[in-house]
Length: 327
Image (cartoon, rainbow, N blue to C red; front, side, top):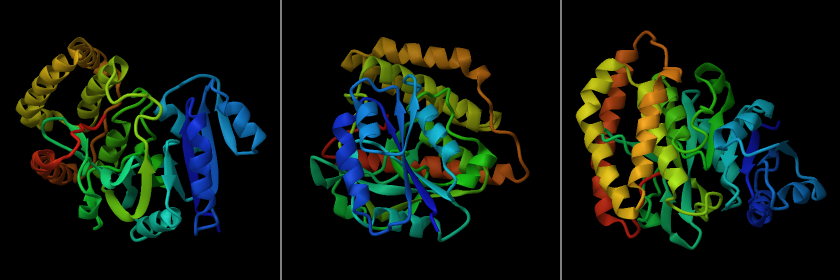
């Protein structure tokens, strides 16, 4: 029985497609589907996929990460979906490990992979995503020794660049928010799942090698900085009720201020500020998570996770070989 569809969003990633698909062809698990969602590529990806007979959806233009993966999730008919960046390769036991991890409990919504840096696999790229009271989302473990991240654990959210999801939960909490276009959409969907009573976990046995910024081409650029700033406003407005926004407002303000000065130094201060202002101006158009019985207890647990995430960020930052704030 086929339980999983691997969905690979692609935008002008021709150079990455063959290595990624070759690594999937070498899986110990043989019963799974592959679906590439091409986001209006102009680099020959469309022609290559057709010539090689790869199952694919072809979108007419670049609609963003969220829209592309949503198209794949809607088309999938399997119990699970794996979202996998095109600039990755995976070890042979990757799919088997993710299916085993998510199958341990019906309360697990997503499982994040052990993402290693392609250029130096001894260094972590992502061991699951975390969130803080400063409003900062970040990759747990980024830039730190990979050997330190060999134990499974709960995380705030799975990194959508390499993670498995329980497909029927999307029907309850909604798909990835297409208003985000890209960036922080995985934190948002993980937050919504937690509010609905589900868990997100990290699986060290599912190993992925990641190039990083394979589509956007750089760690920071005006488009990414502006979009991330805007989406950070959406993320908090949608998932936090008034009391939590008020409680966290000093931390969120401090986090925005620190990031603003950080981006000023890099020459992106106006882009960051513009994104924040756009987010404040348009947040009212976002759909907030509806209230539900028992939500306060869940929110208190999430608040504790965010406090822990803040402490963990500063602990990990002090020991990183490569500094990196998530998206």
